[in-house]
Amino acid sequence: MGVTTQGTIYGINGPVVRVRGDHAFQMMEMVLVGHEKLIGEVIRVLEDETIVQVYENTTGLKPGEPVIPTGRPLTVKLGPGIIGNIFDGIERPLTSIAQESGPFIGRGTVMDNLDTEKLWDVKVLVHSGDTVKPGMVIAQVQETPSVVHHVMVPPNIEGVVEDAANDGKYPITKTIVRVRKGKATHDLTLVQEWPVRTPRPYKRRLPMNEPLITGQRVIDSLFPLAKGGTAAIPGGFGTGKTLTQHQLAKWSNADIIVYVGCGERGNEITQVLEDFPNLIDPRNNRPLMERTVLIANTSNMPVAAREASIYTGITLAEYYRDMGYHVALMADSTSRWAEALREISGRLEEMPAEEGFPAYLPSRLSEFYERAGMVETLGEEKGSVSIIGAVSPQGGDFSEPVTQNTKRFIRCFWALDKSLAYTRHYPAINWMDSYSEYTEDLQDWYTGNTAPDFMEKRERLSRILQEEGKLLEIVKLIGSDILPDEQKLILESARVIRQGFLQQNAYHEQDTYVPVRKQYNMMKSVLHLHDQAARLVSKGIPVSVITRTGVFEEVVKIKYTISNQDMEAFETLNSRIDSILSDIEESYRGTERRRYV
Image 1: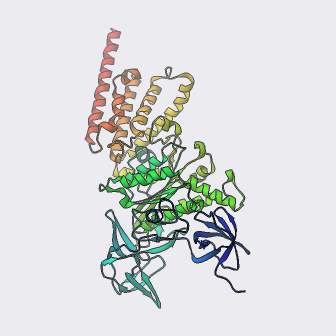
Image 2: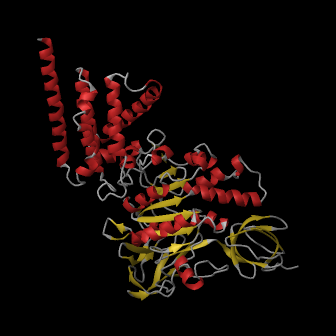
């Protein structure tokens, strides 16, 4: 019997479809399932059957319907038109689908991932006879007013240019360069395809010694993230994961933002889709969407597409990295993605591990996070992909498997605290539970670009907060009144750090973003006040006398009272602190002299 070109459905279990027939399916091959040609992917090949996960709703699918192989893996199209677009988990354009099928995605919807009719203004950079190599830029397109799209030679092609088009307006399907190597000829267009589960190649990894500046003080100063690094934001419901990622998307010094809404509630994704187009890019006062890609996959969409969405997002991010851009990918949230893995694993009747998650959860997380990095691209550019993944542990329990396994593969942990969020302290990043392993890697950058003693000031701030944590345990037992003044000063200085430095108002015009230089001066002023007050306390002056002057409250308010550009105002502030505390010291000396007489 000869090999047929298709299989036949004989079993359906949610998104998992079992296929039989004399066929030749391959692992991870994309297939078309049923009469409606639903998109699916082969995830297991046995002797007598093939298991397919379907990326669309399988309601109404029946045994006996055909399953057609495509001969290629699940891929995405990479070319002009990605930036500013909104896709689902398998790169179908949601805006175009909405125009055609209404508010709900029709099953079996087949639509070009990118607009094939739009004409792009193309500047061709190579000529006949030129030698081209993988990753080399052959043309440029002004994709948006904020992003120049570099059209590159695909990673597996090299040779001599046989023919090149003139500058002009072309659709993405038009051949602009023809490359020959030996007898093989390759027609290069503005678009290329890439399998989402295969990392895009690069020349070599580079050290991560430059921070991703976010303008958020608790992140930049205490728990910095390097460009090309990995970070997790775990937190329960209402702790501000999404708002924190919005702030990072808006203010971080990444060139491109890829936001993956993976399995979140529909109203939350809707808020993202409504908010992002209205955000203004602080770099050029143009819409932020001009350098942003949104991938929306809500919790009521098929779980298999949710599982694929983060691979789609990271592939788009790697593509722009290869152009030499610094890309920040926000995944919100990896917990919902892990739940999709768990549901599919259960339908496959695999042996469950902790809390029902599949045993391969750690390796899948590793595959995702390890695609981040600062690299030298095939085109000899310097680019990076930074991954910031939100984690939604049930009940805020950080001991659950997704959070614990994520900590194995990330080097920056921003732990959101429910109690801080309930007291309106945002960002609700708990300074006792959070950490960053990039501090030493970034030390030279902070020293050279901010101040030689930046890291020293940061360490001192952290120590004061840690000492406060220890003292609060004592205060809970015996109260603060019986503490010695040295320890009362620690509590007062820590309060200034918490309220004046760590707490930040995302809706305040000045406080929403703070440059690193101002962050340093704020730390310097807080520590200057602490040191001067400690000097008075050592001379027997009570902390209560110092606090009555209002100097601590004045320092708390400097985030509002001193502008982000006026660094000279901090010298004035420090002089004022010296003057106030000197007056206290003189007054105290006078009182002591009168008492002595």
